[in-house]
Image (tube, rainbow over all chains, first blue to last red; front, side):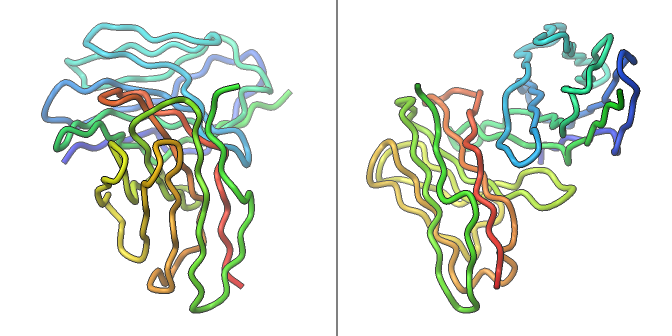
Length: 114
Length: 112
């Protein structure tokens, strides 16, 4: 079945550092790809998404490009802030029996130090 | 404001007890979902519903039950058959056929 593999965490960076969180996927079709963010004790919030190859999703300074040739959707940010500390989940959409379901990676915990 | 609410925020279960987690949405979404999150792991799908009075098992449905009597409500019951219920439970909803899911704040279930 479809699956998502994320970079192992935790990741610790200093403020203003460059961030990359790797995400690769396995899918039989052409799924949409998502990044969700989870702040401590809260639910997930959609950060960005891309629906087809070469699309770039972006939001709040974060970017990710849908790379079909490498089956990847890496998350990047040029200059992180302390407020970016959270757990980040990569996910893909999987249509089964007429229903759209999400398949998640295991999450990457990011800590930004001032 | 439109959104998804889950209650309670924390729930305690005794051995052999069934407990019910509430999920309500006012987004007018047709589809609703329940996920379980364990520490250091991704989300796993328990049940989902695409329309009122219909629902399907997800990947880890054993020990759980749901109902969908109203469009805006999708309660999850954790039965005594679920031997390891301690987890963070997340409810989500989406438009019919829509790929983007919107999540509630979650309920943390603990066993006494």
